[in-house]
Every structure is written in C-alpha cells, then in structure tokens.
Image (cartoon, rainbow, N blue to C red; front, side, top):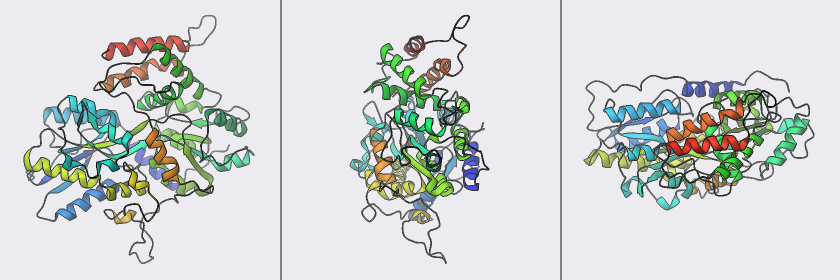
Length: 468
C-alpha cells in the first residue's frame, strides 16, 4: 500500500495528540491576588476536541447559568502525558502548591487519590439520576465502598479499518460493524497483505500504559472473568492465567500481522500510520472517530474490538482541601458537567458518554443544550448549518455507531487493576512484557523467553508490589 500525505483534519488531531503526550512542565499558575471565595478551578488533561473544546464549552455554560454574581469555574489544562499529569496532580495536592478544587482523574487513579486522602467522598448532590449511569462506568467512581467521583467521559478500545483496502483485496468481508473475531481478522490481514509486509494492523505497544491496556485486553480475552486484583486491591491472578494471557498477547501482536513500528507507537504514532494508509486496521479510542470519518468518509469502518476491550475514561472529583459552601458548589458543578444534557454533548463531540440515556434513539435522547455548537438542531448561522460536523450515526448495513458498537463496548469493557498501587502495577507490566517486543534470538546461544517464563517473572514481580 502506498503512503500518502496526511489530510489536514488528521494533522490537526495529531498535533493535539503530540501536545498531550509531550514532556510538560508544571500546570498553569493561578492569578496573584485572585478571589478564591467564588472561584472553582478545574484541573484536567488536554481536551482532545481542541481549543475551546467541549469541556470548556460546558464550563462556560455553567458560568453563564451562575451569572456574574455567582460562582465561576475555570479550566486549567495540565501539560504532559497521563503519567506526568498524575505526578503533577499528586505533587500539587500533597504540597498545596496549586489551588485545584475539582480534578478530572483517570479512572485508574481514583483508588490512589482516595486512599491518600487527596479527594473527598461525595454526597448525593454530586450526581443526577445515578441509575442512568452505565454500571461498568459508574463502578470506577468508588473506593472502599464510597463514591469519590462521578464519571465525566468514558472510553473503550475500538477497531478502525479501511473498507477501501478490503475492497481492493477482494476480501470476503468489507463491512465489519457486526463484529469480527481474531481469526477472521487474521484472515482479512492475509487478504490485504499477502506478502506479509507487516501492514495488517497497529496498536499502542510502546513502553507506556498503552502496552498495559493491550495486555489486559489480551489477558481478559484469553481467561474468562480474568482479574489481576479484586475490588480491595488484593492480587488474585494465577500463574496459569498469566501464561494464557501472555500467549494471547504474543499471538495478536505477532510480527506477521502487526506493523513493525507498533512496538514503539503511542496514540499519535499509531493514528499516523493508519491515516497514511500504511495499515488496514487500527486499535484506538472513540475520540478519533469524528476526525477519521471526516477524512475518509465511506472508506472508514469501525467495529468493536475482537475479544475484550479495556474501559478507560476520566471522572470528576472534589479535592479534600475544599469544605463548606465551596465544596457544595463544586458538587453542583460536577452534577451539571455530568448531567444527561452534558453527556449528550460529550457524545456528539466524540467522547464516549457515561449515561445510557445519551445512546437512545434520536428524539428520545436528551438534547445537547449546554454546548450549542454540538446541538442536533441546525444553528442560527447564516447557512443554517450546525457549527460542528458530526459523522452519521448509522452505517450502510444499518448498524448504529453509538448504540450498536460504542454502547455495548462500554457495557462489557473490562477494568484495569483496581488498586491504589496502580502506578507500580503499570510499570511492572510494561517492564516484564518487554520480553515480548525486544527479545534476544532463540535457538543456540539465544535466551529468548517463552510464555510460561515471562508469566512466571510477571507473577513474581506483581507479588512484590501488590498485597496478597
């Protein structure tokens, strides 16, 4: 397949991804002498929907509702990768060096921040219509039986593919929205890449959390009901389960099917390879769908990942330094940012919404009133068009993207280890699984590790960092 110049829409998304993953400094400083009595500072990672993105628009809507004499929220976007943002937030909250009132935390960070006393338990006022929250998503908000956060936007891995590549190869299937197995995926890769040039699929296998995500997806696919930890953070996996998981991970990232550079790819690099046409299949997150569709239109397909997908996303929490009326107001802000209207706006912007009602049929789903740019109805612009383009929800075979693919993926997604020690677990998985991606040669004189030995080393390393 011939690589081509990246479309402008993809270049724009890649530049934002690069900004979000670059090495960053400290977060934005608070204005000297600012009145903190009626100000609520929301700290978050970069908004992948761009400058003045959906998160900022929702905060603007709350500020408008409050009026000039009410509380006003301000969004502070932290630079750096997810790991760097976590370190910045931990340092800032532990030292009190930054006046963050509400923090947007990765779902894996909730136990750590709660156990460290950096965020406070929430009251019922922080969440509207809790029964509307998707159960798998809502469960990420709790630690030790208490709610510490409310889901803001969710995430689950999806499989993107190029229909034009499949058509050109006369593949036996070109529409995969109904689902695909790993065996079927390998057959399709053989059809589009008969010479075995490693142009089949790509994912994120660099030495960062993307490797952990791919590993958990493989482990959970190979072992029904697989968990590394229970809900209390105790280590519960067995060496036999880990061996099965390593075998599955090795098979699905085999060199014969996987783009060679995947072992050094993060989100931006894998997206670039797919957008350039150097691979037919891509594992990525929902937020890239609108931009990829705008670029490729009918050439793009999207389906659920074969096997299990990992649940991602971010949840809003109130820092433990807040109290009294300001803490209550922070909970009101969280309730607004996560209400059914806001979640519908987030879904139309490209995020995975956290509420079941957001995925209802048009006309029965909540309206997106908080962020008019993402409203379903035409705007009052001179052309009568909405100010933001969103891809059509229904594919050629009648499958709904939001209801038939994204929503089921979220409901059935698996959790990464639930533990205050997630950072140590993540580093352990990355380190021990490196043997799969940079192994010494096998055979005489070589010492390449087999699946059972990798699993043994992983089991021993995890027992050193986890209780139980």
